[in-house]
Image (cartoon, rainbow, N blue to C red):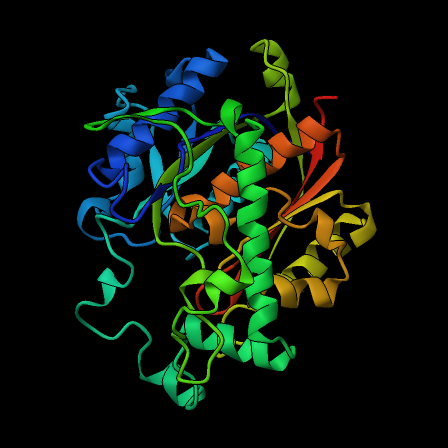
Length: 382
């Protein structure tokens, strides 16, 4: 079976809600990373077999196969196809899985994976403006569930015995790590500047420097009067896009490209839809079992910071060294542009691995409905 390798990965800086990227259409934002991928690799877009593009809220600006119109916005040949994928928050991580599977099956040689979400322009929940998203049968099966992620985050905190202080301490850590990474210029090589009406946008803007348990203590709970979930220990609403180029080692050599990482193993799993967000636990267990690796073999983890309780429950169950978990901060400090987040995290992960000589990295994402993706990559650029 052919191997799949990632030869390049690029992302936009993440814009905060109604911030620097709010005036940029999703297709135009996607076109920026698509063309930067081409610029960095020298690949002729006409040779790209497919574009797998994640996007969650596919209405309004992001409707009508946003992946295809992103390709057209980039000015690529009309012959280049694209498909838009929705696996909730894991959409662009699933796009990477699909790209790798296509290459490993031998059906395709050169595939782009990535995603976009402009939550400033297409608000979360816009698809629920009319109709019933869940239907009567799931509600009958789970009569006491509301399938709400905030409710799930609170239930997880309670089930794993977390205090609000513990959640806030983790959240302050996220901001501190992101601040350190930005100050060291860690993200500079993996981002592409975006020209906006207000000038060039080049640095993730969700960061709140100086965030502490004390500064978070005054925020009002969104999970009930006595709940512990609030805006400060949850992911930020944001905008962004990212893209990766996936191919075989042989094709990379023919194109004069040096692979960064090998797609090692991928898995997807389901969990309790009432808790919604515990899927990364069984998904991680599944991907490790498939890979033959142990948790101790992994040198860096990206566990999407949808909520602090999600990461802490995963860490408690998996026994991972917290120093290796989200070492650059995460969605609590910079944001979670839904359909782009999987590709953004992978871009961050493989660059962190390369910067620090880490052989194996693992990424996992909780997703609406109780599913989760988990992916292991192996560093090759050493």
